[in-house]
Length: 428
Image (tube, rainbow, N blue to C red; front, side, top):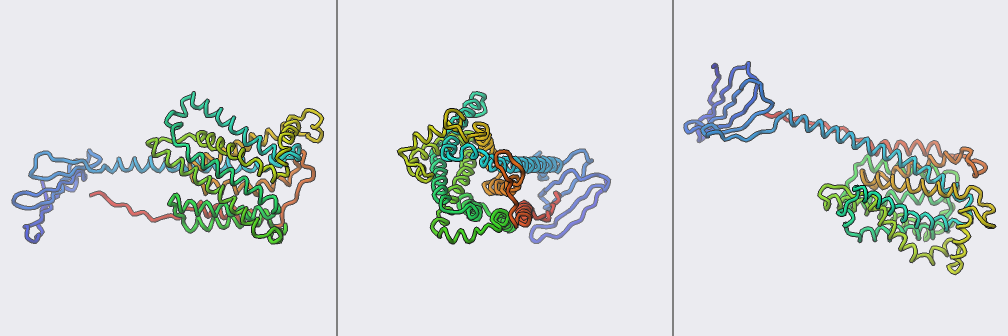
């Protein structure tokens, strides 16, 4: 067997000898050894029948530890790439569904208020308390099917209590401010929702955002403002309303942003407590809606007054609203479209909430907010179409096209991932 040996002086220890096998053999094993006479590193090149190699010391009997195999590393890298691609595709699909459901939710809410134009507070309470029944029914069916486990149901309920409180406070403060602000000014102030989410994610989740993500979020906010409020005198209406009501609306979006970030925290904590398992989103929806309904009941005197309904007249108001919703009795005059349109809104609104929570679960609160925001210009465009019960279609705002383009550019910049040069290290 031919070999090549070269000795290199090593200070204080002797010489380092490299021994190489014939060039025709493929590298299969690397042996590190220290003989009694000479400290050596020996490279042995057996036939290429293996995919990796082993390290072992010469002078010891069969002491071997398996080293990483290049083919196994390649398979792991390929599987990791496929998993990452599948996850990205799932997020994109979920975001698209959320955008569609969000646009439908905004349009159907407007349609649902056509028959219930005198009973908007009834529609809000019907949705709030109806969701509790529907969500817990779905949760029970999923529990019977084995999808929801006892371990999922045993998670602490205190975070859900806070979720319900935040949602109720967000609704109360939003209604109070919305009653004093013009419709054109609310979309401008609603962009505080995205700012709050980024800030709260940074504080409570330790999330760090890249420059392109921050720039993308900023462009999305600018695009929505141009799309919705251009040419509507929104800035003038903000001055007329006063700083207090504008700040109150911003605080309402703080409650809503804290609610979504807290839900993300719940999913992350549940993953650790369930040892890698995923908390079913209907557990979050059901208990969160139940506590929200509880706090809404406590705030009913305040909320009914905001809607212009004295608390003492609330029972009669709800009774008349139910008659209009069912389209029966003498009060059903002017309730054309009920109960179909309100039911469609409730169904689509429920689907929107579920898709939004699913997107939050598999991505983040900021991504779910961007998807919801993207539905705003789509809904505005749909209102320019001849819809039933609406009457004359609305015209597009002056800056709609420019705002929509800026919004799309912002989303693309947020989703853009800079390519990093990767260096590959060879295994000797």
